[in-house]
Image (cartoon, rainbow, N blue to C red; front, side, top):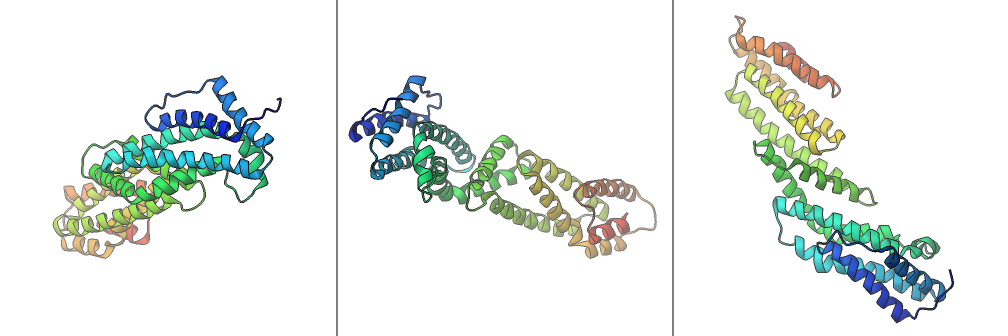
Length: 312
């Protein structure tokens, strides 16, 4: 490639063309494409400016221009779009913005690729272009929305638990973004979310256990345990990580059986157990079913084993 001189001001104007067009993707036009000729023109512009201007100061200006272009797209489009969104609308728009932002950043990374290949490796204190793309969105968007995203996600999960129809794909998409952003250094946001949801589930089933012990027979209680375990397992498999599914089943088991083992046995002993009833037959059926569920998640805790053994 023949070295070509491009004045700094002229080169910056050329890259402004690339940036303005790339920003259209975030503005709602993800179908925006660059031709082969455009790609070559923008890539060569960066290449010539970096190689002709031997000063690191000039190249650093290009590096900062890349970062600034991402930040400006976030300030001008991403933040205003998400600012007043709530609930499922927030999750949906957030997913769209993240997808469009990544596409825009991917194009810009290709245009500024020479920085990644030759300039950044010589300055280990500098973040890669892909790293800048992630950190800008994480720091300027994700961190600021994290609490609202978690709240909206938990609301949908609780709505589904209460019998309402929700968009499982939407939940999975947002939680996949949690994982994706967590994969790039720093805080593991999905693990934080997992701790929150496990605490929520623990409290929910602790309250249910107290209510069922008060109003239901031991047979009805075991039947409800079986139903809840299956529902939580199905729910988790739709949009949560497999490891989270295992932890959820363990939490439900602990709150519904292990934690109240003595109380449930006392309740059974207080019931009329002199005659084999339909309830007792149901206990055998549901007890075996629950045993099957537990065996796939590491077996019984001592408390839950004793409960089922005695009340069956």
